[in-house]
Image (cartoon, rainbow, N blue to C red; front, side):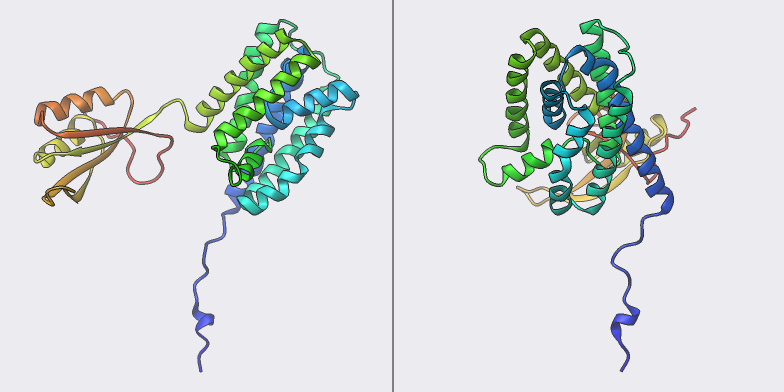
Amino acid sequence: MDNPLKHAQPLSKPVPKSRVFMRIIMVIMGAIIMALGLEQFLVPNKILDGGIVGISIIASHLFGIPLGVFIFILNIPFFFIGYKQIGKTFALSTALGITVLSFATIMLHPVAAFTDDLLLSTVFGGVILGTGVGIVIRYGGSLDGTEIMAILFNRKLPFSVGEIIMFFNILIFIVAGFVFNWEQTMYSMLAYFIAYKTIDIVIEGLEESKAIYIISDEYEEIGSAIMNRLGRGVTFLNGAGGYTGDPKNVIFTVVTRLEESKLISIVEEKDPTAFLAIGNIAEVRGGRFKKKNIH
């Protein structure tokens, strides 16, 4: 009797080596960039980051042990938790990133700070640190175990992951106020906010795209106008009204934020009563998103 398992297809295709290589390079680069932000701007001026790195900075200051040692040791439990909660790829990427970050901070520690101006250190340190963290997250890793810990606590506490992280970081900044001083703590909070917004920009990109849904009886005319006047492809979807059950024709397309205003004017021109829904999307891949020439 023929064995059916012999003809079974693999559950998933192996990840291309080029993609794995790119992930490794970008995680390493992100970790080094974060180390530059820490050792060249924040740490020499006693400005903290949040999370495990913030705890490591305080511990390094109190015990005189290199920052990289604490970053590595305190994050070890989260390698295993990340493996169980999120997966092997995330755990390996995180382990690589934190290992590189630890060694990079140790190597950069003897190098003189880029500036001793607190405001400049806060702004540029936050931007550089956020860029490094954002790159690592974008390529499937993490440089801090705080979010993993928050996911774990979220199962047992009536708070969201974001609320747990916020509470944890507030606690760190309060401790920092007593260890350093309150002026440094306020600069630390500003640096954390700047890094947080920079991470969003790196992950989502500067050119934010818009997902557009249009419900209209003039769907063919509107779709044709979008293709001809904006150079964007459209997809027609079949829908039905939830209340009436009547069939509805839905147009779906993706445009940049610069094209959003023109698209709205096209819809209003063709059908002022059309239903229009616009949402932000972080990334667009595949399909035929490439813009065509309209002239």
